[in-house]
Length: 369
Image (cartoon, rainbow, N blue to C red):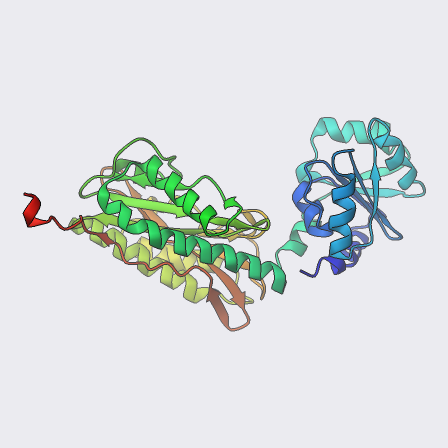
């Protein structure tokens, strides 16, 4: 990955924000900028140099990971004297940026009083996150690897649905399969929702056993070297009712319309509208109760948002999901989701699990009757 160039790009946006330096405490952003993956780290970035302050557990790891990434950052191992090191780093800085979305009110007061009493602390929003929206080749390779693992894991698990396991069993087996295929773990707690539970977009798996006639929603992703994938497929066990078949058809059509709308320069809200208009035309506008998608990368949900309220414009290098759904209490729910790479002339779909929807029970051997 092109980690070594990221601090230079960050310094440009920090300067544009009118700041002389930036305190980066959000660990995902620290990882993006330095390659450091520990659970304790504060990155201090100014025009001349950058310092990562960590504790004794991570000194050697930080130096190794930052060195491997080719990033020019000094590593300082500190305990109670962390604030003294930070204050020395900040000498001469007039305006110091804080990550407003990741700093609590109590922490801001502590930083202003004990750490940086001579600097004006300035709230900043999304300086690192906006850099993270554009995925380089190394990042994309990791996301694609994660997506391929999730695809294969679902393919291996799909026949098991015909045996009517419980929701918890499906989720556990799918996550175990992703690990067997090389994932570091799941991207998030796998969603398996069947029957009435499928009418809840983010239902947690329960001990409910999948039954004949159920709609089943499976939302899963794999984690590879810090990068996530995200995909949803919906199935019906046995023959669908007319309304279930219509739900499956409408959501599949809406999702295809959303994917077709994705390209660089398109407003994210227009992709949402492409999905939403199909569902609204079917009479189910009120049953599509969430946004159409979100960015995917080091976080499972990151910028840009793909929703009616989004002010983002898609750009080449973004990776976003397209995941419309319809949820009808009494009938269940349907959601279909792909992760896609935005390109100048459209998009490239990264998740390839088949969208076939019907799960048939295993054939009965006449000799066992």
